[in-house]
Length: 321
Picture 1: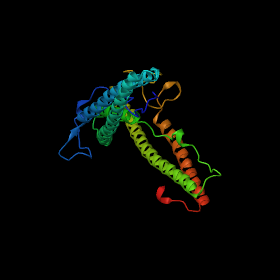
Picture 2: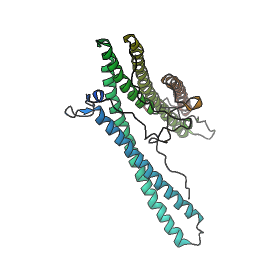
Picture 3: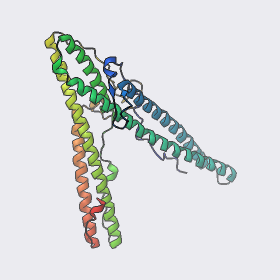
Picture 4: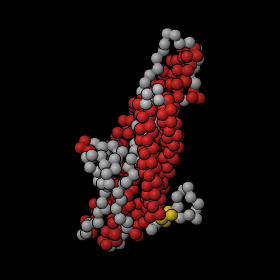
């Protein structure tokens, strides 16, 4: 019996993101998420609490899935060790593996649902931070005194830090190496075989097109975060003209060279040399490379599909692309 893991969660690896203390006057700002009725006005602390709860729930679900998977693997290994002559024991252990496999699949579905819930909680929290940060940045030229500017700088520093942390936490889409294979024509292929291969290439092209759209959305998010970060830094850099640029600094999430955050949870962020996280500029550049690769692979798949259909005596099926 194969004891290889049947599934691996795609998220939940960075579930203990350390966050600093709140600046109360900034976080009492009410925000109405687009997905909620207008009467349900949530503050930033409430949205943060929902985000943390979703993260904690996913972490617990992943831990439960890992326990179930470990039990299934042990039962599978035990089944392999039982001699065929001991039919009674083999049947009992086989039944146990079947029961555990069903529980693993059930927990997989729960984890996947919680991953989606976490993404939605993160989106709502990020949207609220964007609204608040843009509002604060819009106040930059209205500060009347040096102290007003310093107070505004404290709020901008805090909200921008939280916003940038959430943006950095999300994984960047990338081309899977498993998708880079190329179908070839077999001398024994008939028209149906060739059309089937054409359909496979057209399906792959549609996957690359979807990936390109995902990359474009992520690039837009990163570029907007970069623009807001520059605006915040430019304002903070100019505070010294008021004679006091001493701003309280929130504690950023620092990761060691081992790829773990302060709580010891493995992270999923891309890292540069020495284990440091990639900057926004580096992530944008890396995504541009991924976009070029996905575009090239999509065009190659479309060309292959067209060639297979010519061999089969038909044209490219645009409905599949």
